[in-house]
Image 1 (cartoon, rainbow, N blue to C red):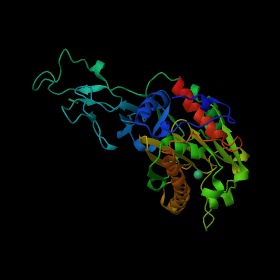
Image 2 (image 1 turned 90 degrees about the horizontal axis):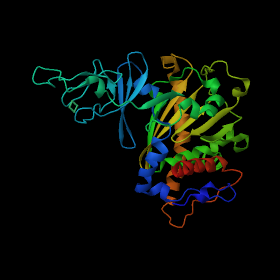
Image 3 (image 1 turned 90 degrees about the vertical axis):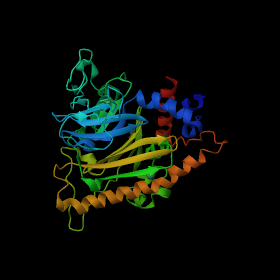
Image 4 (image 1 turned 30 degrees about the horizontal axis):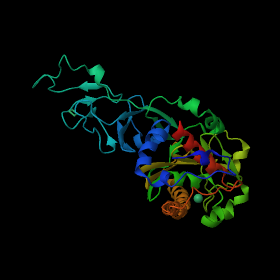
Length: 375
Ligand code: FES
Ligand SMILES: [Fe+2]
């Protein structure tokens, strides 16, 4: 695949070719080079809220397991038993005892240590000199939590999360404070017939606002937006954020100690490869893009707030309303994101022509993907 046109300056560049959106062979390569070698998003902190919570994740075909351990930390393991390779946990839930394999009952603690091997030395004998528990822990996957999202580096050799992402961590350092999910009503999923990259590309730009989001464009119009372009993230900001106020004057609590600029500013970045983030004075959100194949993407959305007791009864109407607003905005994007996918079956499409003024962040994303593929 020739990616030289993608790497050119925006005035001369073309977008990624159709193959990158529809081909199964390409998808397999992308899985290794773009997802497994980077820090990719796989879950929310709320997926394993309490010690003993477990949550299986199918990450581009790789079975992973999120676990909240006794100390309250989040661990990620390959969800495969070290004995005969049985899948360990198939349903999200809360465990009282260890992680027990349903096949021959080998059991692991929440830090992945093998702790029980019943009958491994014969009936009634739970040990054998050949079975060294220390050598048979679950395979741990490098993980990191940021912005309420759980990230993994499957290859294990990417620079540390902080080092790789110092720029964006610095940009949003004011939002480095506890995030609390607004309960069940603040989480929703959508499955789209599209390649995950088109969801990123659409999120990066404000160009489509007047036509795809006419109501949003009234409150936060296209001309108060600015571009955000960087090596491993891109997006847009608005200088016209207006927070939600209920008919009785109720508002969400602001995050603490934010600078004045955030009273009216909000920012939306696609953090490459697969999470779309938004921050506002009084709430934040994350949308995980979980590819289910080259042409299907599961979008998982969670909204976060400043108050630890945000989920209490008197907040439910506000929480529902805020979720409804965002769900509405994201639903407006479905048609164009799925439409671009359909368009990519047109063999004469050459990756498309970027507007040098409006498509900068999208072009940055294409360049990031192309650099990963070439590396
Ligand atoms: S495969 Fe897990 S105990 Fe045998
Ligand atoms: Fe949009």
